[in-house]
Each structure stands twice: as structure tokens, then as C-alpha cells.
Image 1 (cartoon, one colour):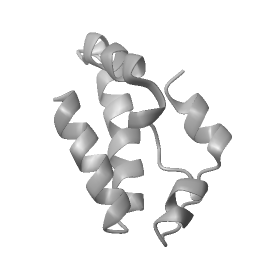
Image 2 (spheres, rainbow, N blue to C red):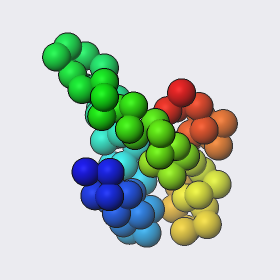
Image 3 (tube, rainbow, N blue to C red):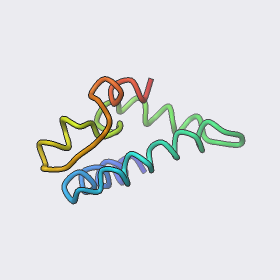
Image 4 (cartoon, helix red, strand yellow):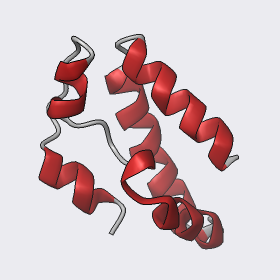
Length: 79
């Protein structure tokens, strides 16, 4: 699943679907943290780190896209 998420994030960044990725990841965090949830999976996402976090405005800009997420927000999201 983590490999699929990595591929999805990369595709969302390249195809200017940044909002879709950021929404997906926020929803996933809520679902994993709620009961019954899956905290073990969310811990695995956290272990991957920044490569699976929210897409920041800096990353988006490099690909010609836009994001309202700062680099700090993206870095802290998985904490």
C-alpha cells in the first residue's frame, strides 16, 4: 500500500492534482486515527516521512502547480 501511495503522490504532483492528494492524505489520517481505524498503518506512513506527506507550495511550484500548504506544515503533518 505504501508503494501505491508513493506512486499516487508522484502522479498527483506531476498531473497538478495536488489538492486531491492533500485531501486524500488528510482523510486517511482521520480514518486511521478514528475507531476502529488503523493506527499501525498510519505509523508506517509516518515512518516513510516527508516523501508521503502533504504536497507543499514549494514542491508544487517546481512542477508548475499550486498548493496552500507551507513546507513547515507538510513537514509537521505526519508528526
